[in-house]
Image (cartoon, rainbow, N blue to C red):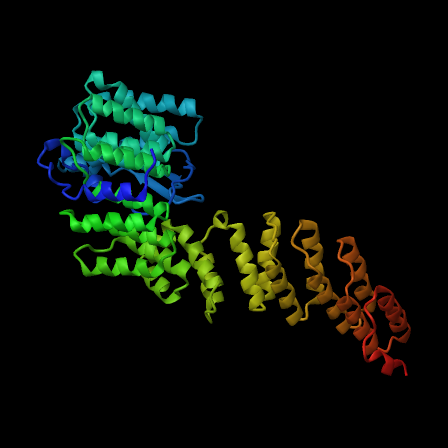
Length: 533
């Protein structure tokens, strides 16, 4: 299906009266996620989920795992059940305690084991708790799936087990189908997402929520045409119509693809209809403008949000922090950082790296101090190769040789290869200004063996520095190193040698050098005649 801009415009504009059928009971967005659209807070692509599980302590019923929702090695999470003394204080308290205990057991069984063994243990736990699922209400099932969303494979395993136990009295809520479809999309299991949608429809659970779940699955995989096709089917459904979550999904799809004009059109339809934008709507718009590097539009949407009835949440400030970091607006970046500092330091390590990058590219007077304070927050496994390269350049520009060499050493250990000539020139310029010729010589040897970008300027700098200290033998050895790495001498190379020989009155060396220069066609310096007259 070929989607033109005009066809899309007609499709969106024809769905302004989006609440016309909301009196129908199946079209109400029952799930909290459906009401707020909170499963679309930003554009961070869900990466692989790794976990690190120590033995489960039965004394305090707690387990520490590592979740990688935001990339890297992720944040460390400690799951604890409530104390026994708190149980029994009302229905909600008992439900929360029961869910917490079940989540701890499931995660402990699934994490850090072979897939087949983990699947068997998870199934045993679920079979033992079968009566709980039979007697539980919709709230229990939805909360459990939401808690397991950090471990998507485990969440789908639990949901598939419930599907197999429908004949035993286990019920599946509408919201569970929607959530399961979105999780399947994040795991790139689109066939499963479509299968769940078909199954929900065959069971008579064909609601706006199920359509939104399938659209979300396609959205996570960048399938814009599929999303629009499902949206068109939803528009023509006799009892369902798009809600604010539906339009948030469309905003996210176009924002991810940097189709800003389409995204703005969807937002215009929301404003013209009787729908009310929620915090996820504004967050998705802000994220879309950040993706397209449209900083002023990002600020404009935030101003509209602040002026209205929707209050910014943590995700809003996190998005703005990232946007201002990429923009280079350090004052605004630091303002946002102060608002969510504790959250960022514990859970948003990629934002720490973004802030370090912003300081590296700035001319802030205290940038080194600020960079070092942020770097202390990053564990060793959160360092990145590109971050080391930026730090090398910053320390070189500030003539902080010790810090520069520490970053260089870390880059060598991690087998990082620098191929940017400007970074290499920054390094040799710093060594030159600090008159550290031995350090430069050692660095050049390491760079040669590590495959870093070499240039003739490095060897010229070495020759000048050796010549300034009257270390003529070592200066002449640099010529042999140049030939080893296929850098032939140029006129500038010979002029450096000539000036050093002239400085120390090395007449014989000068005569030999002038002969070589004449044979190479470089001519002789103008002051050479006066020197020999």
